[in-house]
Amino acid sequence: MQIHARPLDLAQARDAGFQADVARESGQCLASCYQCGNCTAGCVYTPDYDFPVHQVLRLVQLGLKDRALSCRAIWLCASCQACTTRCPNNIDVAKVMDVLRHMARRAGHAPERCVKIFADSFLASVAKHGRVFEAGLAAVFALKSGRPLQDASLGPPMLARGKLAFLPHEPEGNGKAEVAAIFARFARRFAVQGVGPGSHGAAQSNGTAEDTSSASQSADQGSGPGSHGAVQSTDTAEDKK
Image 1 (cartoon, helix red, strand yellow):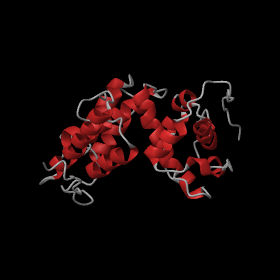
Image 2: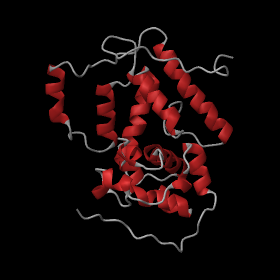
Image 3: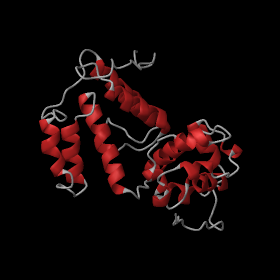
Image 4: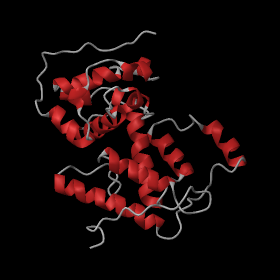
């Protein structure tokens, strides 16, 4: 297996505080990474990355902020946790990759355009309906990505099996309001941090990995029929004021 990785340019200007910023947002001790390569060995997407996972972590350690945030690897990561389970120093590598992706969004880097479009469209759907509206998401993504017929052949079989609905199925009870509270707290955090607004208003998708994961999980756990449980309330004392 041949890995097509770009060479590192150590002569680039370094950001001395970059590693500390990533460590603070991810809660991981990145200095403990000694480049064993276990994360890269277990990653099925390595052939598609411009930088293997262990080199991405090395970019962070070296303070090469622009190179780390502009690489394709952090956008192609599937967060499958294989790298995390293989790390001998218990670094949550998948979370670091997620944090880097959010930092890249805030810095205006998005080398994988379709990945960003899908993430924006997914969170916009969750913010509007309280859970993802699959048919609407597919239509919006197809139009925004410029590939309107890419998955058209999958529509009829999915409709025949009841896997797609023409109308959104929103959570019952307080589910939608609880999901909206996550996005509202999200927006307040950005206002305090002075970060620019995201691409779809209230559905801020530039935040921390933890908040985005919470929003997505809550959306997928709507309390309506066919769901996997009630949406867990995430309101804080601040939200209830």
